[in-house]
Length: 482
Image (cartoon, rainbow, N blue to C red; front, top):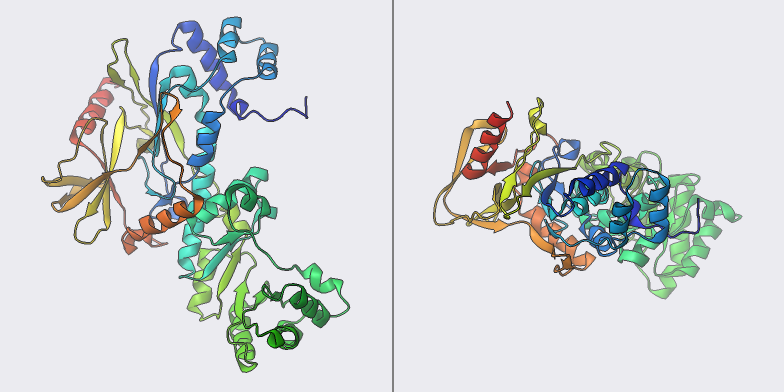
């Protein structure tokens, strides 16, 4: 194994993508145009929606698709691949089209989040990376958005690097958490790479390093007078932690005219301690001192703390955010939806299963989001054939996805296509937004959802329906597979 070799992400694929690629090549299918959809089946934590993320890393991956000499030599050593196929891989690049729903958009089960139109080998080979990028970052962005909404406008910071599931879990996880609404991260490299604001103050070891807790607090205030947040639970929060913090604030910050400071609670009964801490700080004149909390928080604990009138201004959320520990798998899949014949006609394909949820929606498709004109709220998503246009002057009737007998008719609405072109004929055509703009867009798009869809428990089911043409094609294919 060559440990000095720089990782080529093209090789981050399931091995069967390569065996299928070699088989396509031997069968003469390497140039056959195919259509694949990325979609997911269930919202994590039984929520009402997910948040799309991971597209930016896919763009970097597609732009760098290639096989180098060492990759070819490795594949040759497996004894499975023809020399003709290996020669084909030497000049490999992506020449197809990709459409995607922009990062930060609320997404729903069974709708195409990303669509690939490309020659068979190319489309097959990129499956693994597309799924791991969208699955991981959408999972973390979704969890972060739940936690941020639970905080009701208070700051949430991502604190989970040390318990993330691997290096990329920490780095891209911090990015996804920021998209979901976190204000920053403890992960320094995510700031350096992506501009996710990194910050931090002290650990318990800082307090233990000094001869006294007061000396530790005073020194920190002297070194960082404009960023003095003191961890007050190393020994005794109410007995010495907060009194020593107040003393350090009085002796160091007060003469400088600095009123902005903070304390952090990392253990104990945080609701009770925060209320007592607030009283002590206010009585000492430190009314602007913020109180932050950490220690295995999630959306439910934060919600309960606030229901108990905890006096908290900021939450540092670690392992349960960066691992989405309550449901750590997003479950996105990549399925063939259509192929083109020699004349360029699109031939729909379907995957059939006894499990109804695993039956795919065939064909090359388009996704519209339906907004009520009066309220501006998102009402439903509507999946059509790629060349169907929605006539907003006509009523639109959709079925409830959980009860096929129940219909809803929209008469005053706006229909907006969700997917945008990212690559066309192998060329990047998408203007990549700044990460801060993605976060703001996510906030706006989540705000467009009804509160009933955003409930943590038993959320209202958001309508996602097929056009009549697409439904008929699906039924025809199902009847043909009996």
